[in-house]
View 1 (cartoon, rainbow, N blue to C red):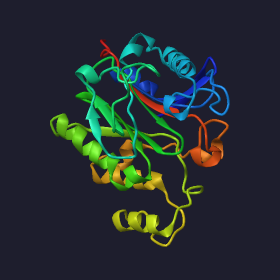
View 2 (view 1 turned 180 degrees about the horizontal axis):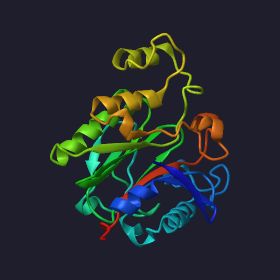
View 3 (view 1 turned 30 degrees about the vertical axis):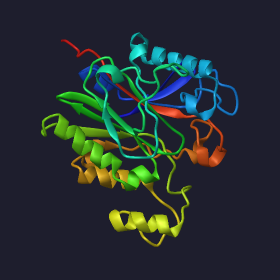
View 4 (view 1 turned 90 degrees about the vertical axis):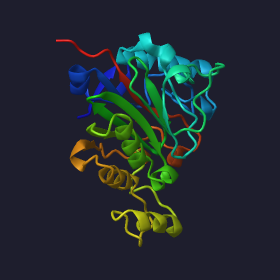
Length: 270
């Protein structure tokens, strides 16, 4: 279960019980506590939006420090999110891709979902209305971070990632899903042709609507892939209605990005 905490002006939503029990860090960030100037005010974590690389790197340093994982910052791994459904395992030379904004080790190309079973490899993806998803397997331990915009959600990125992760772990892993703040049905007005595409694939989406519920799409997709609704945590926070706490591309246009973060710490010993 996610709870909100604040430290040095940085607010994160985490599952402290999961971390204490299994050494698995899950976090969704808010937008305050950083150094970025407007329109990226202030904890912008993505370099691709036009922010100063030095500001992005300082924001990341502050976040990892608040999470208590700054030792692992060189291994921070990000992706060049393209609204697709490519799912990449982070191992070997991919570790540390995009760790520093402006460096010669760029983010993983063309991926919208990353996973790893490696200890000490933080995964981070970026959002400003799209749906952030973290998948967790407690035994064997593994994590995945997924970016689901409408194209990725329509392509079933959440369910495909869950099935691929379970298969990679031997087929018997029980997964749970954490879904972060995203644009709500209340604010996501789209054309009838898009709604129709979703209505043809997802029973929770009515065809006769001008609004799209991406959270419902992700929930149904995960459920079909074996991650039951009882093992999904949805905060019910609309980014458009809460630009005081989150970035929203639809509400703000040029703006920053908050993040979904996951990492495996050394396994606790008791």
